[in-house]
Length: 240
Length: 74
Image (tube, rainbow over all chains, first blue to last red; front, side, top):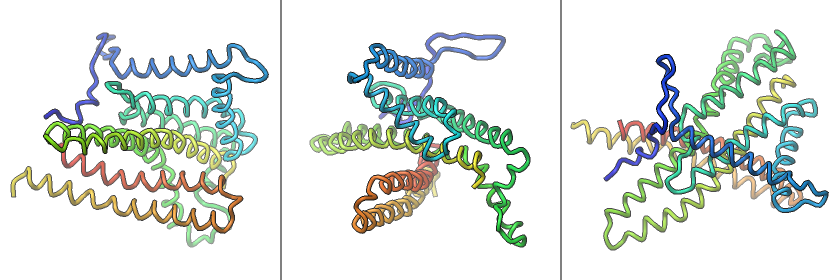
């Protein structure tokens, strides 16, 4: 029986070497290119006619942008409107790569810790740099809110600092684990369907229901990633 | 004890941590239903918070699953 973890192997399609650094075009790169092309296709076909009363694709694209703009405005305040394109790209990338991974024989980009950790580190660095640029050293007031008595500082500040520094890790691990564990579970139950003879309809039935649940988890995890980014941005821009 | 059987027992014990996540998610949605019963007009707002909270809580249960998978396959 094959290992359920085999689906995550990275295979090189076009091997490239540049000064000893491995820059091959792998199946992960191909999946990311497909994700980007899908988002660009959605945008191109959505905005092509640009009627006042929108057609179907235009309504889909406009509603997804309105969703993100409302989320940013509600969670991060009015002055965070300039971050809406960044949040939109983040949301669309995570959503489409989660959903494209549900096709059979396809590759889920976000089920690799390297990818989700990169996204989470980008978000964390952006939020921290924005906080420092806007508030200067007053940014450290985030860890020691006003109105807290001084004797609580040695307990509160390390705790707040730790929970701030662990944000990229939990953000990335949450997304990675939801995707990877879902796919592993699907493969494990598919393996059961091979070994059972007469009763192999039971794992297949479970797989059908679980694929439905996986679609829900894919959309929900993209939404949670984005809304947590908005909340962290709110923390950095308006210190508590 | 053999290494293989210790791995299996370890993976089985590690998955028991998922019960905490299950209890947490149950509590979130039960309080969501209670608050919708009290105030039906706030349904959309509170459902958003409930799903975000459920996603955060479920992540911790999946941390336990990660440890179990790491024990089982290495």
